[in-house]
Length: 454
Image 1 (tube, rainbow, N blue to C red):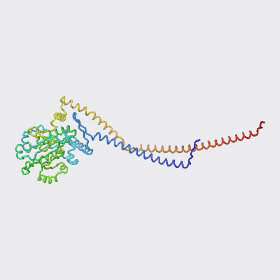
Image 2: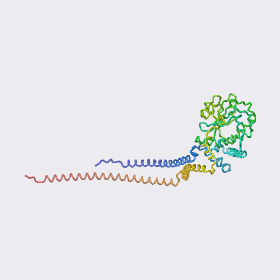
Image 3: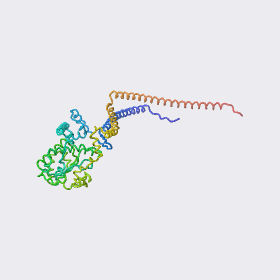
């Protein structure tokens, strides 16, 4: 018979009560943890879906694609800015662009009211000056003569794909410049140049770099610049250009490098930058005659004219600044840019291109719609467990606790019954042994009383 270890009933009861209390506390903690995990999990899923559906901008231009991750705070500000402009009927389709709106917000340090005022003034200025049609309407016949007395132009891109704009201010001859053009015509030419940059150069650079481009790297060569001969007319012209650029084309300068700056210019700059916005001065780098290595950190040698330390000397006799070298001259990119600028054209080729583009975009739009539907469904679900559900859970826990208590009582009864069975079994064994011994005694006595054979 196997050995059974008997446990004192009082000790067994005490230990079971402690175990019940401990297990009950553990169960409550697990329940609270599950609730937290459910709520946090739902929140994380919603945030992830929102990031995937909103924070990634994906645009496809034929065989080219660009992808950009947006800043959540900036995106929220742009959405609010856009909504206000729509409500006030201040958002023409041409300017309904995320990055245009963002540039105006940045220019006013995300002060919404100031950005709205700046936007309104910009629309008014464009209407008064016929800027929307200035590329087609304005013809600058004196361009070649202007270049002779004011060498400037776009040439190549920097290492991040931005257009590089160069001015040789040291070769500027203000009096001769004003003899071949007028201030008003030069300003129109300047505005037309900005519009062409947005219509042709930035889109082509964006496609080539596969990232959004809407700013330039500017290099000003001030070698030989004589401030005394600059003149009031030239000074006023420069100030008017700066106001036009700052008010209507904000945040389009990525970096400016002023090279061949002498000690006089550096002293003047040290004084002048105190009046400028710190964000602007951070973009401007004043360099002396040993500027080549600094420029080559930003612009590849093949994209930089030789007179600035690069290796390019355009074969065109007119020189680098008149060559207009850049991806915006690529026939393939010109075609794509024109298709983007003329989405309503009915030519068969363009219809086919748009059809192909729509086919490429359709899976992306479908996936985004699915993600938005998931987000909508998740938003409908409560972030917290409703009180009635909480009461049901607590009631279930109470029933479970009651059942466990009954099970403990049943366990005690079973152990007591087992103990009694053991005792009965031992008593039966004892009785059997006594009976066996009695039987043997009787047999021995009877055997002694029988007569022996002789």
